Image (cartoon, rainbow, N blue to C red):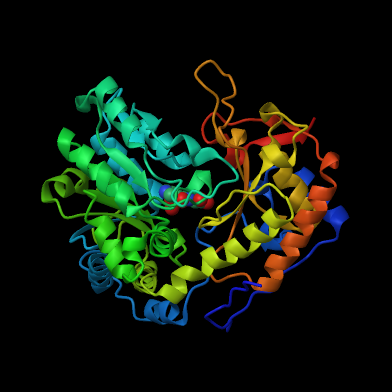
Length: 454
Ligand code: F0G
């Protein structure tokens, strides 16, 4: 058996509660069948997200104690800027309070009205910010990227022919930039290859376009490049990261994925691009040397980023995810393969074939799994798509229940517990019915919407 091993020990712990099933049912009803609206005290394994819920290291906690409090010119900020340069090879850095704040700044500066942004796949907040700026998102992934059961090593790749066709169709003057997301979140934490990114760079150069790279989930993408792309088999994490980041004009991140509770940033080596964005930081985020973060968070981020260069650190999460994905797959339970980063993604369409997309199968599966296990995941399907201009539901291309693996948080026995409960639910899947909205926000409805069983 291919058992992954924790290359860390647990020295600070938090007690968990496992409520009786009747109380879990009540809690789910009280939360409007939306796992975002559960109270964490009612949750046994919080697999909602890996954002701001990762384990912190002793080194991060120690660094937080020596932070330099200053509105302007803090030494903590200088340490962070140095870490950004070491890790991503970018010299100019703008701090923001989290990833979507970076998306806000980038979209406001570069996305013109009716601008089209080609990308491998959207993330919810990315799409919302591009649309808020008056633009649209155009996904140019390979046709097989959405296949649930697959052996494709790089489902996060951009389809180069589709990218070229999009540029011809919309005109390069209407394309503010090409966006690449490392560890493509919404299609199952799937990576792109350096080979693909080099081709994207070539097309970008031919057309005078820039590449904006979202590195929020880059650690796992680097893991898969080392494991699956022969050229990089013997390269260090840092060498792979620099090769990747050197191909991008601007990169941005949510540091909530790097063992921090808050934070993010935008980095570039291009002074002109930097200056275009710089003045919006004090307007929306805070002064240039804190950007909405506390100095303690800035110190934790600097250490967290450097720890991301450690192979033992970045391999942990993908190996634990692979363990669960491969076990479920071997039992015939529909799950995205090959295993990606970020989490295990159950395919709700295959899990609940008696429901259609307007029954919100991924939401229904999430509610059901909480009731049978106390573990909460996140709906990544039609509920996560907002309605179109005519008020119609937009069926998602994939109906996924994402079970995120916050980095270094769960033990293997906890993972086995979830596996056992998923298996029970699979055997009893006919018990699960659909959902409908009773309260529905217009934007990002998945966060606060309330539903009921149909
Ligand atoms: N980009 C990616 C790839 C993300 O996964 C996220 C957040 C963001 C940007 C936005 O960052 O939350 O700091 O504002 N993903 C979280 C998740 C919310 O649960 O997947 P943020």
